[in-house]
Image (tube, rainbow, N blue to C red; front, side):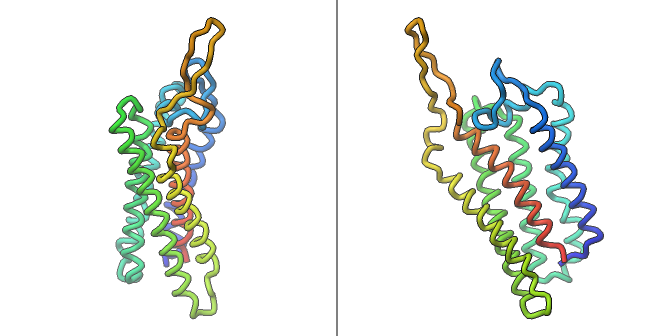
Length: 230
């Protein structure tokens, strides 16, 4: 669909930013309220508030990554006449991924105490991620059909369709996970003095779901970049 030269510039830039962000997440282990930070029970905004040393850098990377989500538009739009119907679908997918990236970024800034706002952002993030990956599945299938009659059957497009399809199903399960209805439920613990305290368990379903949605947005976007290359 798109020659390698221009799109690779955007792709490599995006992958570099993604790699830096992922490494910063993995290599830094901040604490939150005296406890070791865990991606299983702590929210994205808690990572940002607890990791003071990389706060400025991480905020900058979040804005850059969100902007790069729209980068394919600069390559695709001028060449839309060469792509036909697939071009319009590709632009639509780019916009959906861009909006998902913005929703993901905002999850790092809105405290869960603002329940309605935070839940709205989480719902938008998960829904857009699912929709974007569903459309990438469709795009990969269509690209496979285009190349099917040629000597190069473009099997990679079929593989990408399967992978993005699995991601879509995973997001569907994430959105309709029945445990999300009671996401705020805490686990009780008996203290030695007979009192009872409540805290999050090892897994806090909403926090984990948000991290998964962010990760699948990044993975889905990488698949999308690869799917639109010749």
